[in-house]
Image (spheres, rainbow, N blue to C red):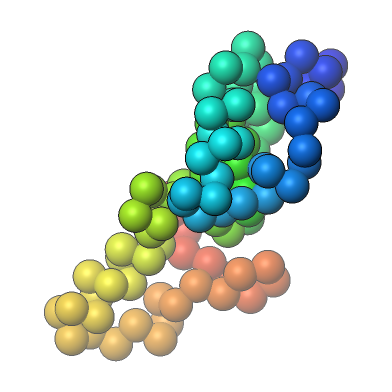
Length: 105
């Protein structure tokens, strides 16, 4: 993947990109925002449904889901909505890394 050598994150502290909550991820998102290969990075992370945690393509990811500035994912909001309706959510609860997950982003 030759595009990786052109990434803005080359030479940066890799630990910056391990953050998967705000504001801890702010610096990494800023670095990604100046990147020339952000589209390639997004293609590498997203389609694989890799359960990626961290910052890639100027996006914060947790368990393969985009994280909003309020630190929630679509997965979190789906479960919260079901709970507010009084529905049982045990069969919707995400199980990550070999434990299963919800089928959408």
